[in-house]
Length: 249
Image (tube, rainbow, N blue to C red; front, side, top):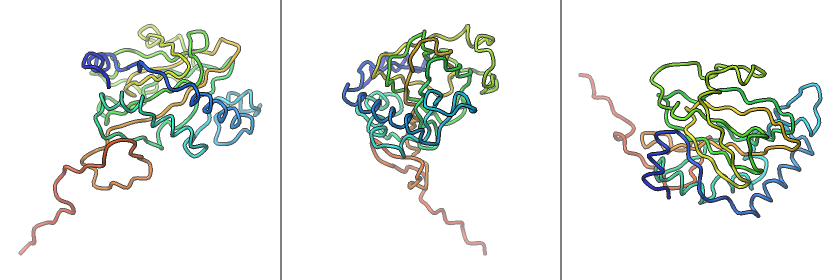
């Protein structure tokens, strides 16, 4: 579990580097499965270059929870859930209709443009980055604008388009790079502005991207196929349901 000081830091900056790393054998299995998926070019895939569809140009593997159970095993690992419980409480869900992908980011991969995944007024969603390989400044580690989840103003969530100049943004000067080790886990509020530079190295920079949120105790419908409870229970604290309207005389 995270400390009170860790929680204060997360609420202030919007991100938290989990102190422990995932077991090496689990990371090995993640990489083995990912390498097979890339070699087989199994769709759905986002490509670096649409005109050259070959393994070296795989940018992102989408819908990973349908590809192999090892991805969900990693996403629901106790090291991650213990940290999340200190941030969003004991009832934790994984969303399958948000993120749910592996960023492969091969050598030369173009930047991930600056964006915020959610608005500050939206239900808090935590992005978890699970690193299959070391992430460095050279190979395009994520950069986050600290505190931008607390912005009191409305800016476009996606101020840049694909292939825009990554450095031509106020966010570049406000952001901090966050290098991470192989097996490391980074949690951040998806309202934060973030992006990633070009991969200037000669190898890939693989990471899983997973969406987490607290189960909504006011949800009447509990069997949502896009929300998978990974810890706790689906509680309900709203008014009795179904609500009966008074009879009109």
